[in-house]
Image 1 (cartoon, rainbow, N blue to C red):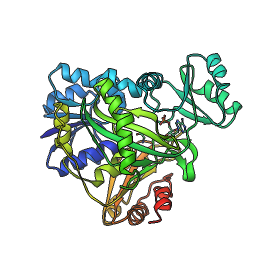
Image 2 (image 1 turned 45 degrees about the vertical axis):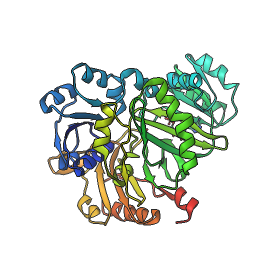
Image 3 (image 1 turned 30 degrees about the vertical axis):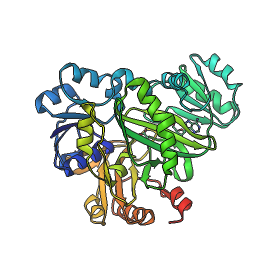
Length: 405
Ligand code: AMP
Ligand code: GLY
């Protein structure tokens, strides 16, 4: 198939890499220098023009912004086959207020919440919660619209920074899990569960980011947990919206069972990198069949080895970032067995590859067991250099501790 991938980050590089391994002809807009190694890059953000010039058999959308702007509706109106939710379905991610009210209406387990449309209403709402309390901006915020406030003063700050349209919600305790499915509107295929690492520093310190690393291991969820998530969260969400595309439930595995922290209407970044690394086949076919509403009896093939992705971030991330630093060592990193380096924020400069975004590279590795996968990833990280580079050193440590392997 000719497949057009929309986006230009690490997630899209991983998708393009996987599809090209399966023998598809891959195009990407706007793409990045990593994607250019596995497909043809159209350096444009006019996605319709890109599709009209490529005439793909299928378009796959990576990021939430074009989905929230209605790219799937626009493509379908022109008779182009696209895998992704409609603008209306994308509101599950684009508006936290909409998502929380949707969950309340459909009985999907989530944190207790109050919506507030003004600072005064938000301050009032605080009285109904203990600390820590969670304050969330209503709209899209690239993973940075959430503040966990430890006391009233921090909550007041959060309200003035993130407001006026807010969700105030109860703080949930437990293991955080990213659970993603492919949905054709009725049928779903779950991906293996993954765990992301949101905070910028080791041990969960520092502000939230888009995600500093992720891993995929068959032990993250038991088969019973998976079934419960499908029954109480995924199936009700799909049945009441007819959702097509990737549906991502960010979950907290609480003592009362799985609860939704957020819905995303796309694959996670960086979760996609270890997922694509671990997939063995059937991805392009599943997307094509799903876009046709025909996912029944389709299966994805998985390798048994766990996989892990360590994000290398630019100076200043997740705050004001610096760009234009020279990147070296990717080839050496990729000579480590089982390692692939996905480009997230890079560009080809006059002197070679340079940094061009907050998350720069996703060093992704697998191994016969999780400990070896982690070792391989960090061995590869040591080969790479750019000024200001920083990364977490504890990706997958929670899993390693839990399973002692
Ligand atoms: P979100 O953008 O909604 O995924 O929130 C970003 C991160 O904040 C999540 O991945 C969690 O680590 C944390 N978080 C959000 N909501 C809650 C909650 N209700 N309880 C505990 N942690 C939360
Ligand atoms: N890694 C979390 C996200 O993609 O939203």
